[in-house]
Amino acid sequence: MEVFRAQTEAIKQVKGDYEGQYALLKDYAFKHQSCNPETTVKTKVETQPNPSSKTRTFKRVYVCLGPLKKAFAAGKRDYLGLDRSFMKGPYRRTILTTTILLAFI
Image (cartoon, rainbow, N blue to C red; front, top):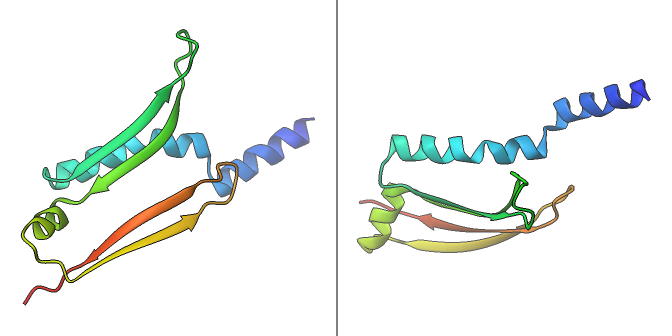
């Protein structure tokens, strides 16, 4: 049993800890907004039905970088692309991304 625990811990260190990565989202949002205050980062979490539980379930994250927001609002967009990816692992979900390619002359 001790070998199994050691193996599980080693795999967690190599592949990463999923729950730990979600805990870093708040720091990620703060870093973006401290570098550029016009950047918008919103996260959506869902509280558990049990009020005594302090854990929450991550639902989604929205990131809009400030300079891209300004350029898009000014009409300086040459290309707008959508892409969808499918995640593998314990949390199988779909990731939808939007990309704006800007050409400043």
